[in-house]
Structures are given as C-alpha cells and as structure tokens.
Length: 103
Image (cartoon, rainbow, N blue to C red; front, side):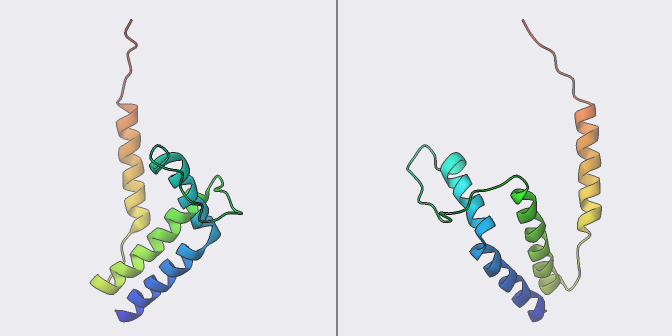
C-alpha cells in the first residue's frame, strides 16, 4: 500500500514541476480564474498552454488517482469502463435535448 502512495506522490511532484502543467496554470490564472481581480504572475515564463495539454493532464491525474486508490483500497478502478458509461449517458442526454428558438 505504501508503495502506491509514494508512487502517487512522486508523480504529483513531477507533474507540478513540468512546464506543460505550469503553462496550464498560467493560462487558467490569466484568462479564467483570476483575470478580473489582478494580473496573475506567470509561473512558466517561456511556455504557453497548447491544444491537448488538458487531455495530457487529465490522463496523468487519472494515473495518480489510481495509485492513491490502490494504496488506500488495495484495488484498482475501472477507469475505461467508467468513461464508456459516462460517454454513453452524455450521448443519450444530448440526443434527447431539443432546442427551440423563441422570437
């Protein structure tokens, strides 16, 4: 159990030091989260967020969370199965939505 928890911590530390992660944090701070309150200080001065960096971070986050889950529960989680269920439910939802323009 301790092995998985230490592994998760090592991965988290590496991700937080990575330029791609810092560029995403910069982008969030500058354009989404804090853009009305103050000029956010840049954390990755030479890097900008790129298309797909969010997917990269999500995939790494799932790997870290899985290691935490393994360390705490002693079992893995079916992330792929869960994603397929979520996609199916989202598709069912959006196929059932209809929009009417009023006017």
